Image (cartoon, rainbow, N blue to C red; front, side, top):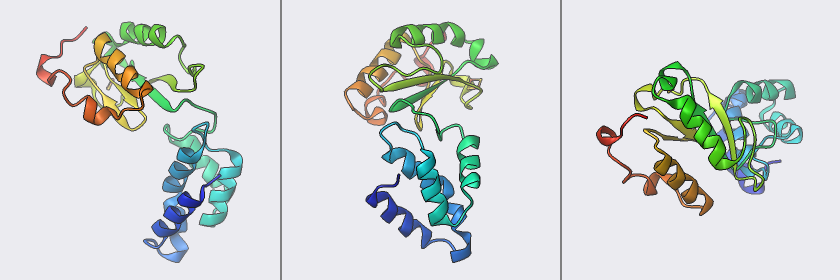
Length: 179
Ligand code: FES
């Protein structure tokens, strides 16, 4: 369900589109609905609400949600970690590193930690092969992972600290060694 604040944001966004092109804002609307949700997912009710506002068929909205890997129909953790173990990353130790990630969080692929904070999923190439091992945490990339760096990321997220500012001083790209 969209919050009042999200409804206002969406209404403002729609002023940028021609009246007969409201569907163009569907991803933004889904993003807002997901951000509002305590389960970090888009319920069928929210999808119907989006469809009504954007004058779409609810199945079209469901189709968009199903297509994009960062929109979720099922309950997810606050932080969704997409860990790449596609071939180029696997050649740099990603499979072994992903074992470490799962053990560290105490969950398996596709699961969410009991505190609702983290969901982990393996991913196909996220476009950072030359910086493997790498992962995407919600919308942020984390690359040249080491066990220490991963622990620091999790610690920051548990503390509610932003990654971008706090990880900027992580080891320079050239200094990071592959596993
Ligand atoms: S294969 Fe992992 S980022 Fe490309």
